[in-house]
Amino acid sequence: MDNGDGHDNYEDIFGFIDDPMDSSAAHDSSEQYSIGQDIFGGPSKDAVLFCVDCANLNVLFSGHETTPMSSTLTALQGLMRSKVIASDGSDMTGLILYNVGKTDNVLNQPGINTYQSLDKLTADRIQSIRSLLSVSGLDEFQSQFGTLTEHIELSDLLWLCSKIFFPIVVGFSFSLITTIHAPPGSPGKWP
Image (cartoon, rainbow, N blue to C red; front, side, top):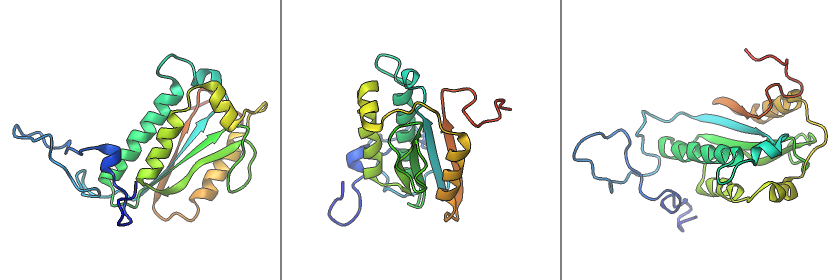
């Protein structure tokens, strides 16, 4: 995706980028904006870590064309695209798959796979989410990431997230995406 000058060629991923704030009748749909140009009121300098619970894979991969997993990854990909457009390049995202058999994280916590570490957005990172979207189903996902017989405690995931965010000075948040009403280690009741 590098265009030869050390910068990603975002048009390969996004195509033309229209200004969604322009409601004028003379709006030209071929109008383009430079990546990083502020069209939403300024850079947000944000760090978001997405944590997807893979404990209930039968539900995540249920459906014919659209599954809960594909919907989740499509939403993440869309958020990453909009952050690239609206950001000054300092926004960061990451993706963690937890309750999987393949362990890969900075604390070596079992059952947690850091698919994308927390880092600045690039076209390659968005393409990586697209390639995860191309995983055709449950069997392929299980062969790539494995399965767990015992679910991890939510506190183990939160501890890992805190360690990942520790050096970050900007605002940070994480999104917990699960199909289980009360994940193991949670208080069992949500407000």
